[in-house]
Structures are given as C-alpha cells and as structure tokens.
Image (tube, rainbow, N blue to C red; front, side, top):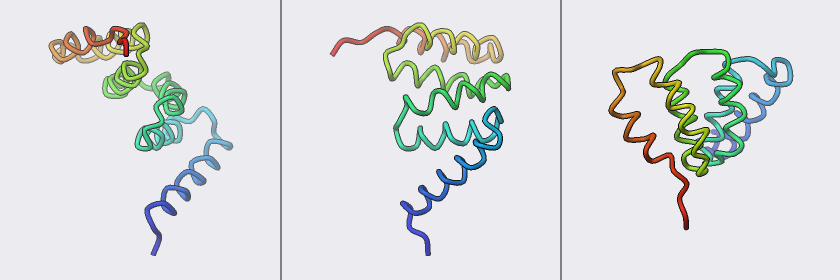
Length: 108
C-alpha cells in the first residue's frame, strides 16, 4: 500500500509528465497549482493557477488566487483577482469587500 508521501511524490511526477506534454493545459496547471497549495507552497502554486485562470473564467479560481496573493502580502494582485471574481459573481459582493479590505500590506 502506498504511503501518503509516496502518493504525493507519484502525483507530482505524473503532473510533471503531463505538463511537459501540455504546458498550457488548463487541468494539469490547475491540479499542479492545487498540489502546491496543499503543500503550503503558495509561491510555487501561483504560476500554475494563473495559467489555469487565463483559460477559464472561474470566480472560485480567482478567489483562490486573490487569497494566495493576500497571504504573500501582494495587495495589488490580491485586489485585481478579487475584482475579477466579483465581476463574475456579484452576489458574493459582501465577501469580496471584506476580503479586498484585507488586501493591504501587513507589517510584521
């Protein structure tokens, strides 16, 4: 039986092979981005998530990217992705406003 660590390594290898064949593909980029997010490697996740987001107008994906940028204290990118999400799903306006206000650089 495969351990969780082995499963993760195998999943990474599989996604890497797919991305070599289809570097712009929506699904492999989305899955690789989510893989890195699960590893809490936000900086590595963002390029993959952005490639996926460029191909699909998906408010949920925009929310994920906005939160990723917010975590990295990158306020301009955070706000831009929240605005994209808001444009697609205006019924979530209250959630967007609360989160956009949190897209301010934090000092430690």
